Image (cartoon, rainbow, N blue to C red):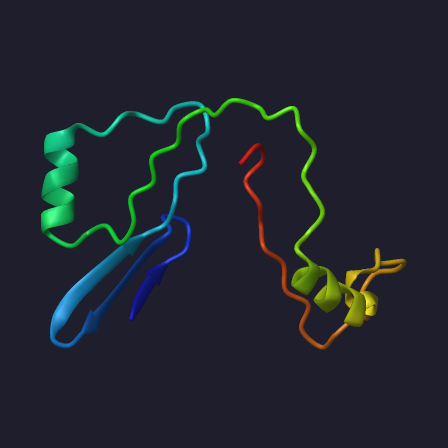
Length: 104
C-alpha cells in the first residue's frame, strides 16, 4: 500500500488489480456539473457506487407530528439515551476526531 497524505492519494493492489483512491477536494467555491456522457462512462466502468440528485423542495409549514405509538414506547423505555448531554464524554486512551467541511 502507498499513501501520499498531502495529495490525499492511496494506491494498493486488490485481487491482482491496481486500485487508486483520491480524497475529496475541500473547495466549496465551485462544483462543476458532470456531463451526462462522462457520468454514463464512469457508471459503466463501475467507478460510482451511488448517484445523488439534489433538488429544492417546498418548505412545509406544518410542524412534525408526534411519533407513532410504537416509536414513542421505545423512546420512553430508553429515556436515558435521549436526554440532552450535560457534560463531555470522558477522555479515552485514543480520542478521535472527524474533520468537518464548513457549510456542508
